Image (cartoon, rainbow, N blue to C red; front, side, top):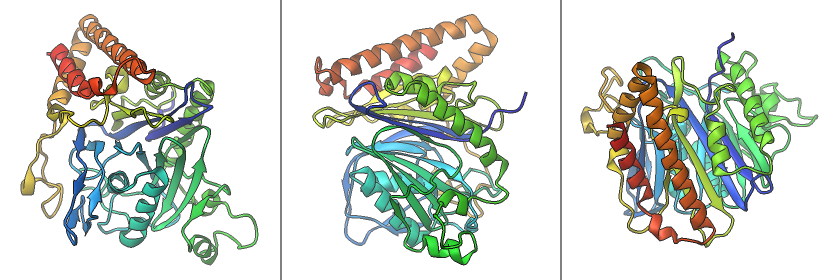
Length: 419
């Protein structure tokens, strides 16, 4: 049997694709197998004029005000694979390779751009403007994994809010964007935007024409012009993943809910949920963004690998919510291998409490399948209870304020079950 294709996958459903009047966002983050993904929240903040911000590799000017964010992020980097802000914006990214060369030096990672878009954008379009502006100014590049062996790429993004979604695809400092206002859409590790372009870098077409990738006369098709002639195997295999994800979304078109999105992220036959090989699904996220702005947005995170063996725990932005330190990795300050030159010469233990407990449960599943499956059945019941409470809140039966610490409670309960 051929090996399942390997890549991240982002999904969105907007009415009428969704069952209710909600926008549903989902992403599986497929990363190096042993990489730890933490879930960290940061409050809204004011910053002194002229201050600088330390991203993963470079410093950039800080803005005076940043939004509160919740991020699912590889523990070694500043940026994030996916996340949301308190303005109802969600963003996820994907690796992609194009005809434009990958920058050999250190710049902003695509994951840095995800976090910057969330911290600075109050809508999907505003976040897109943040990302493209920073991309044009600082570029993208640098090692994308915690390893001295070089591994870098360009990025595509799915940006979502309560009203619309944007697909943003990049090639070096160039970019193109497609607007999505209804139905279902997914992206994977490939260029998907053809001639349906809503916004673009002002020099995009002139560069394509100068390089001989477009004749300047026929219809301009971004993916045809900028896709590499000999794409990496990862991009080629992602075509199957993209097709499989599209088929799963279309099967549920008109009935997509948070539960449906979770089931898609847990799907192994399509390769969307990866649990073997050097790369696997290390973190997953689902968000529910009600069109009704009087209702809060709900963001579900696993904070552990393999969503088929994890539960989604709901997070709601609220005034007095407790920061959940048991899904935040240890900090190593200036001794962190990512901060030392040359980078990544040593390894440190970045596992957080939930990650460790989840590893123990996976070991139990292998050595004592009956006991392991019993644990996961109980935890799935917990997940179902949380989804029921969320549904009651969205229908007005209970207040969202009562659920502000639900993420903390679910993490604590999950660890106790594993122990």
